[in-house]
Image (cartoon, rainbow, N blue to C red; front, top):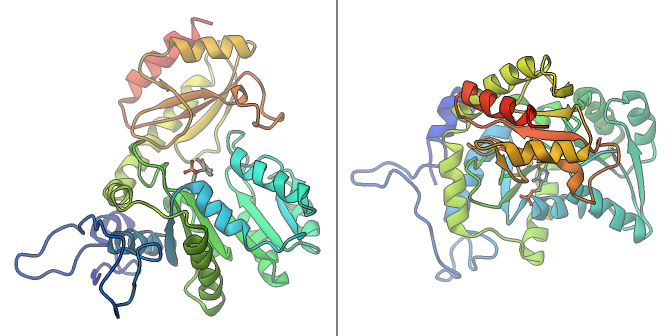
Length: 361
Ligand SMILES: *Cc1c(COP(=O)(O)O)cnc(C)c1O
């Protein structure tokens, strides 16, 4: 891979299109191929495909450039999260928000059962984060939180973790590198569910980790690489090809979806079927507390025709879900809360469909 795309010189809209292309020569392909191989002829850089694949390299170059570091693609967001949590010593102390992605929350409970400590703090309580960091081994952050949409003061909390030498991880799935680049704020590791915005079409499950291109970052990156290779949660080359193809349109998709989310947040605030809108002011996800109970909220989901009633987020199609239908969801999430992942359809069609569904309560 010898792409000429330099993330320092190009606008992000250009970089996502240009990054991870094959070197140009007469007759060369515009795209990297899907390299379907399990092994390579001896004495090259990589000898077996559990540790490397050229299609991965292209995607990793593009995502690494976007986040300002070095990326590794994993089999799923949870594969990436498991690799990042392996940085936590057995029995160690992790400081995390009191609502996290529920898969992460379940792994934190498993860490406690194995004798470790988890200190859970409300995402906006900066003072408590700073105090808890004094005795932490690992800091885990997500901002905004999902689905309550609380925003953490990342720069302050990550800065303190850096001063204290506490390893820090940010799940940047919801913000994407278009809104936030945690490595520039002092994070050690960025985690993504590539399944969501980066791929953007609800057709693959993939994850990624990114570390800074510094001595400290590269040494953490070595540990993540070892975890990926030895635990074996590696990505299929076809999925990674699709993710890179999706990444090409990230900025146009995210811009459109974010503009529609802002407009829907404004309109929903005055809707008689809505008790509360939770929207951090940026991004393409918002949550609403329906004026009614859990059953009423479920009826809204069943009544939409355009919005896809489904779990997950970040696709081109708009998605709606009552999060508490999952038993592992935090009890802090109200039973009548619906998470709306806004897609790229016309905002008036999205509004009309939501409006009729909310009137069906
Ligand atoms: C979906 C998601 C994950 C898990 O990713 P998978 O690709 O489903 O394994 C982790 N974090 C966040 C914020 C997510 O939305």
